Length: 426
Image (cartoon, rainbow, N blue to C red):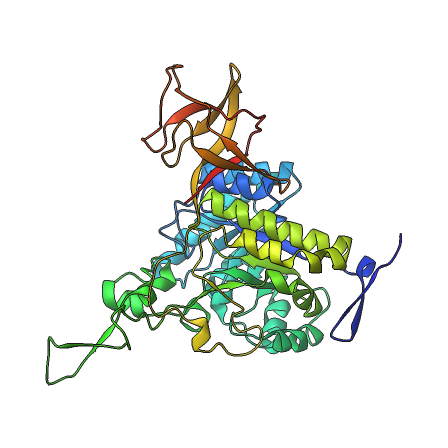
């Protein structure tokens, strides 16, 4: 095997000696889990109906969880289950039962549990010692002594707090056991609160962000009120469009794969357990391509940076920032005039079968015969094509498909495969 040498900031890398980082993709339901696996994830993280910090996601029933883990294992991929709530007394008995149920999955039990609460961690050690334990970013993991602490207790991986710079992670890597893994968020929404410890949602709505029910109060529009003039709302703005003072841009580090590798990060984590299959497919296959091309030949990666960013922007986003990786964010990392996503493409559905020369699709948004749409494939290919025919499940011709979740059959004038995703440029 030939060893390729790559220089990053005067550090020489021999790529045959560096293990590829894991690409860890989110999934809010079984459909998205399968999409993540097919589109390039090395591992997927999911939540059950309880005990994870995305209560508004569809999440997984125990049956779906078992099926999803079995599907991932069939492809040689891993699944991590979140149990990272801040637990109260009344949660503990249920958590113990939940872990026993996961253990009963046998060979298709989760590959790891993601935990933030020391009490929940202790229960996991007692009930499922055969399952790896990862420490959630919610545990405020900002220094190497914290990593050493969790390692001594039995954790195999710790997720860095998002407030760490690459420089801090490099120092951390040098001062923790070699076998201990570092996982870091490299893409997705940023929380305005320190490591996600936000009280705004609970204060305004009674829905606790630390129990999985965040209302994203940080994205709301705010005014100030002078205490002797109740009802007079003074805008915190310089123009008429409004100001969203807690509204961060989304994290995106796809142009800095070498720097992430240099820092010693073992797992590149994508945020987004409430996102669609289209978002997950777009982000997963693009990061997969970037990582693989870097390890194939760093020169290819450098040439394709602009192409990676062009494709990443096709997923919903709030513009992009590098977060804390290169120092503390400034006003340039906030969005002041809108709290909505930028959305270039609409998700139309995922191919799930074939019948009588037509391809089956569970339609997600309306499209019509004669429209030009795009087909994205797990191998990274994208094809623009024309919708030639749509029928319902009885074979009746349709001019369009206006009803979400309707099962339809289509002809796009090209060969399609299961898990191909259709999208339309807006």
